[in-house]
Image 1 (spheres, rainbow, N blue to C red):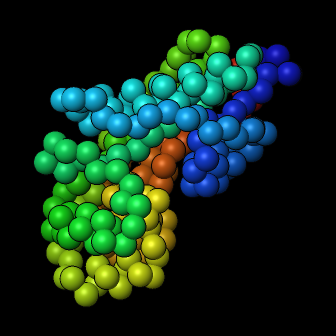
Image 2 (tube, one colour; image 1 turned 90 degrees about the vertical axis):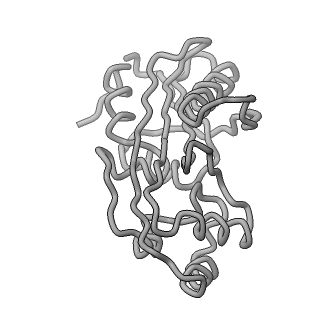
Length: 194
């Protein structure tokens, strides 16, 4: 890699920014400006892949020569995507629907440069929610206000108390960016990582 190669995170998510900072690389942040509306009949895995790729490519066009990371995450329940709730009532509804269930969280990351996506990875994490009553759901939502989190919880915070188990190959994926795959992609692109 040339010394002047830049890295840009195509996301305004503070969770992704904090995760990427763990790798010790300098990077800029830019908003991707991508329409996240699912296409008709688009399956959750296809949606999360498409959005990660589109976010990376949208930002890459504004930063010629830079390597750009795009990422997207959603929860899948009964084959339907669950995104960020945006508010209290929607968060309560999401958690109520996930109570006592296994929910799949898909987190995609794409590394792009110029007009080309060079690498794409989708992490699949299964979260087993314990049976939750209405009062504890409301207490949790009011305490943590997870309105900007797919699935209405923060696993790195109090949200961990909502689960019976998590099955994953990369615990950072559930927070918003699978760092194991991201580090591999960046090493393959020539970034110096331990």
